[in-house]
Image (cartoon, rainbow, N blue to C red; front, side, top):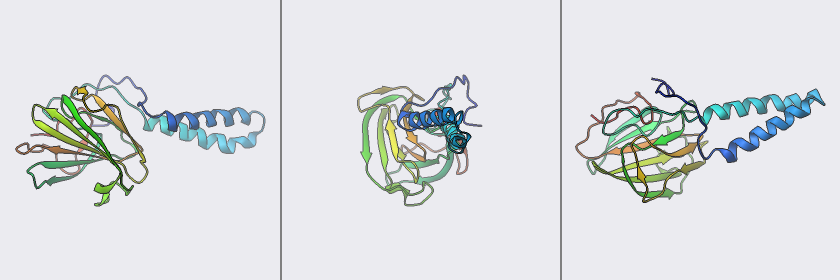
Length: 212
């Protein structure tokens, strides 16, 4: 299943992209105009226009119809690892490549009880030590109890943009935040809830069921 296969597919740009996209697009437009006076400006206009197009694609945010399941994937990407945790929970780590949609969604309906920013490094998301990267830790009060989700920045991603704060009520598959340019999202399934996915499976945020 591809990132944008869920319907309806009306396209929009993700919230929180302006600081990256607007300066790039404005510079591309300015150099394109200058090309009319001097064709040498094309040396700058062409790559800047290509970069703007790439960013428009990267920051796409398609509408989706939520899937069915108690716990839905919070991110597009591929299951990188599934690890039992000492407290009985199971961590499912989802790696997001540059080709994925980078808007994250609520895995369950409930209340946001905590949104905590934790400073850290910027190792590649596939590195085993990326757990110590810059991250935002979410806790949701749900019908399954407390659900923890972690947005992790990577080597390129240097900014995580939460859309909600503690105290907010959230619907399943609702947009909750963006990781600019990367890279991994972890979700911890409560004790007694088994994953229905395997390492290497492709995930679609708000669509793919991850609990058995």
